[in-house]
Structures are given as C-alpha cells and as structure tokens.
Length: 515
Image (tube, rainbow, N blue to C red):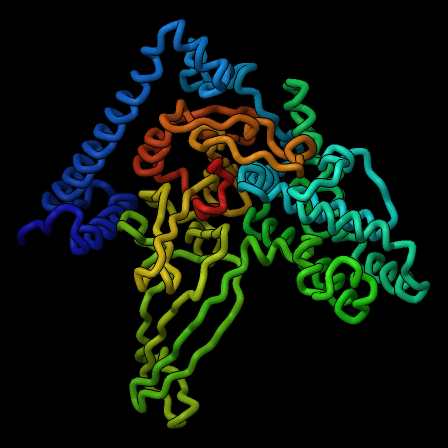
C-alpha cells in the first residue's frame, strides 16, 4: 500500500494513529509505519531549519551594527539600551537587563501562578483590571496607595474616557440618597469575597510592577490572593489552571452583574456621567470581562428527516479544541466542525417529532479581542493525554465576516499554559509568554498611565522585528528563561510530555501600535 503524500489529510490522520501506537509499544510498529514517522520527522526538521536560517539572517542584521549606528539608535530610541545585542542575549537565565518578576511557589500553587503569568502578558488586560479595581474602591468609599499612580491628575480633551467617568462617579457619590447608598453597601457585602479577590489581584500585579521597577529579584508571595481563593481551592494541592481561570473570571463577572443591575434600577446614581446606563457601565469598566473574552456561538441544528432548522445562540468564554493537533488550522476546524448525529446519538426533532439523524453547524458572528483556547489535554479520568502539538503562533479569524472574505482579522498567540506530569492535579504547569517589547512599535501616548501602577515593566519598551529571544518561560521553580519561537515549536513537537493546555490569542488590531 502506497504511503500518502506528506502533509495530506490522509497522511496526518494515519500519522495520529501511528503516534498513539508508538507511545504504547514502539516494537510493534510495521516497516511502513516507521517510514511514515521518519518522513514526518524529516519534514518538520526541514521546516525548523528553514525558520532558523531566517532568524539567523535577521539576527546578523542586528549584530552588524557599528558603534556609530548603535549610538545613533540609542538617541532615536529605535533600539532601547536593554535590547541592544551583547553577550547576554543568548538563551538562558535572565540578566538584570531583562529582569522580570516571579511569583513564589508555596504549597503547590503552580496552577495559580501559571494563570497569573499568562494573564499578565495579555495586552490591555491590566488596564481593564486597574479601572475596575479603582471603581470598586470608590463604590466602597475606600482609597488605596496605588490609585494615584494610575492616571494623570490633569484633565485634557484627550484624557482617558474611563478616567473621566471614574472621577464623575467619585464626585457624585456624596449626592446619593441613603437608600441608594444602603443598597450599594448591601451588594458589596454580599459580594465581599469576590471584591477581595479583585483587590488581591490588583495588589499582586502592582507589587510585581514595583519589584520590576526597583529591579528586585526576590520572588513575590501572593499571600492575599491565596487567602482570597482559599474557600474554593485547597492550599497545598495542585488544581486545574483552567478551573482557576474560570473561577476568577466568573467572580469578577458576578460583581459586575450585581453593580450593573443596581445602576439599571437606579439610573439617577450615574445619570451625570451619561444618559445611557449601558454606556456608563462600559465607561466604568464593569463589563470588561465580557468585552475581552465573551463570544456568541450560533449552533444550527438541521433534521435530516424533515430538513427543519433550529438555531441556538449561546455566550461562551472559551473555545474547546480537540485533536488532531498536527493538522494545519486545527483550531478553526475544531471550533467550526460539522457534526452528524447518527446511531445512538440521533436527536429528537421538535418539528416532525421523530428521533432522526441531525446535522450540527457552528458559526460565530464575531470573535472577541482575546480568545481563550483550551486544548484537550486530559481524559475523563483527569489523566494526561500525551501527544505532539504543532502549535500555531498566528491564526486567521473565523468569524462570519472573515469566512465571507469581508474582513481579514488575524490573531497572535501571546501566552499559553502547558502541563508536565501524569494527571491534572499533579506534575507542574509552565507558562510561555511573549514579551511585547520585541515586536511592536511604541503605542501612542495616553494620559492613562496604568503602566506605572500594575502593568509589566517588560512591556515598557517596544521595538520592531527582528526579535531576540522574544518568549519568556516561567516554570514552578521561580526561574525565568527566554527562547526563540522556533525553539518552542520544536520542543512541543518532539517532547510529547510538555502539552499546551490553555492558550491566549489576541487580535492584532487590539494590540497597541503607533500610527
């Protein structure tokens, strides 16, 4: 039997089954199966070598800079001092020039630290958290030392709109009636655990910023955050990072929902900010989780018996993706897979009232700025599924506009959590995060300087391609290493014990750029 063409769907489908068989018993592979594995490895090695050659050619352009050009570039800020080539630009432990803060791993909390590392490198996420934190404090009549670092005090026409809304909210708080104030206090009291979680999150990110700003190498102990989640996650035991991520997101959403309902039923509390309550909620950042992550998924069920169509709409926070993970565009294909329900999976039709075969189609009217993609990493018994992953670092959008060729949105991978170990509650969670300063132009100046409060200092400087070791790797040993993208791709393909789990893709037009 002839071997299918390398890279074809038939080849990839057969390769997946061969790799599963190879993991069980390498000695039982037939000669043909071994040849298919060899052909696949040769193809991947050729692709990696070609990518490495392109990276080397780009790096040569940087290393050939003369001293005069180097001095000129420093003055023009084209290449910041800490990014200029020197003996410390090799892969390895970070030097003082590349210092970034780390979290203390006390009591098997690598699942928590992994999610926090990954979120820290999502563009504009700290901006949303900062304003939410500030508004929650104002509603509770509190002040904090980090608030003053977040925005300029001078009001200008170009000032951050969220800053203006927050100041109006603070100035009008004394004008609320006693009934409105008591109702607000009751909401905050009922959501006290969630409010403490928001405060602990902001405090931790602000402290990490302060550590980086002062070049402090000591790992930060997130004690307040551990206390805030202790009721849901037992300290000293590893947990699923995806469960922890959803716990935080849903906690923030529950606070936002109650506050939004309060403003909706008492519009006079925010009428001075804007006549439209929904606009006020957006300005005050009480729905930033929805704006960042929420996606509307449209499922069309077609009865194969009577051809009746039933459309279901649902809001989801993430995209669950199944294999095969070596196929091109596997994320899009999995999210938009056409499913035929046959046999015992037949569906009951509401039109013809028959149990018949059905077809399920999935579409997305629009995709969010930040996509949370969850790869199938564990089975039903929480045991690790070891397999190679050809992880795409850039993907095409699959919203309706892009499918119809009316738009061309692109998404870039900015961070992801991977797992090493045998089960979800054991082993170690590692984070790969792309440092934004390596591939972007400086963002336009903004009066809202949340970067001085809780943003990562590693995002303070930006520069265009080519990049030098743009990926940071955070492990559970309070160490940080940096690697090139091609090194990570090769590692994920060759080492099946390191499995990507939770991925964060950001739409390119959502990433700050200069015009």
